[in-house]
Image 1 (spheres, rainbow, N blue to C red):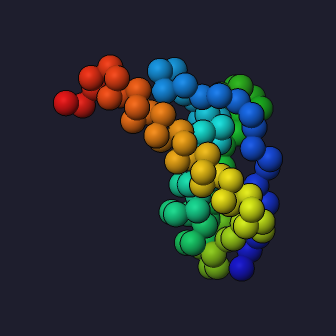
Image 2 (cartoon, rainbow, N blue to C red):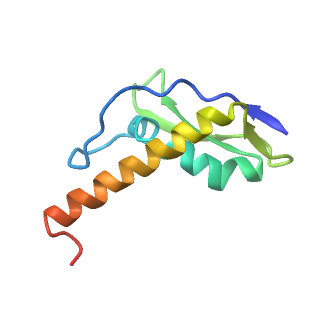
Length: 102
C-alpha cells in the first residue's frame, strides 16, 4: 500500500455561514474524509493547492489507481474523523437554527 502522510491539523475554526474555498475542505476535515472514503481505497489522492501562475485555488488527483493509499498514523486518522464529524454537526445545527431545509 502507498502511504499518504497527512499534514498536522490546522487549528482554524470554520463556520458554516462562510463561503469556502478548496483549502477550507482540509480545515474542516472534509478533504481527509473524502480521500479516506473515496480516493485512497481506489489508489488516488485528491489534492488542493495554488496555481503558481494565477494564484487560483486548484485541485488534482494524484496516483495511478493501481494500489490503495493508507494514512500512516491511526491516531491522526481518528482525529481527522472526529474533526469532520464535529464540522458536519456544526453545519447541521446551524441549518436547523436558521430553518433551512424544511
